[in-house]
Image (cartoon, rainbow, N blue to C red; front, top):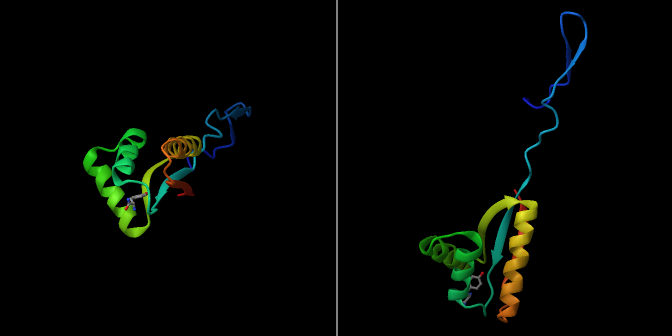
Length: 107
Ligand code: TYC
C-alpha cells in the first residue's frame, strides 16, 4: 500500500519521518433517481442535463431507464457533492410541485 509507510532509519540511525502519510481516497456515492407517476419526462431530462451534466441523449436514456426499471444512476460523486446535488434537485422539483425523489448509495 503506497500510503501506509510509517518510518525508517537513515545510515546514522536517525528516524526519518515519511511525509507521505494519511492520504485516503474519498468514498464515492451514487446519486439514484427514483421513478414516480407524476414528474413529467421532460422535467427529468432537464434535471439530468442541468444538474448532472448529461447531454440530451444520455439524459433521455437515463430517464427512460428510471421510468421502465424504477431506479437509475444520475452520477457518482464524493459525499458532499452527491448530497448537495440530490438536495438541489429535490428543492427544484418541489418548487415546481413535482414529487421527484433522489437517494444516495455508497459505492
Ligand atoms: N414516470 C414518469 C412519467 O411517466 C417519468 C419519470 C421518469 C418520473 C423518471 C420520474 O425519475 C423519474 N411521467
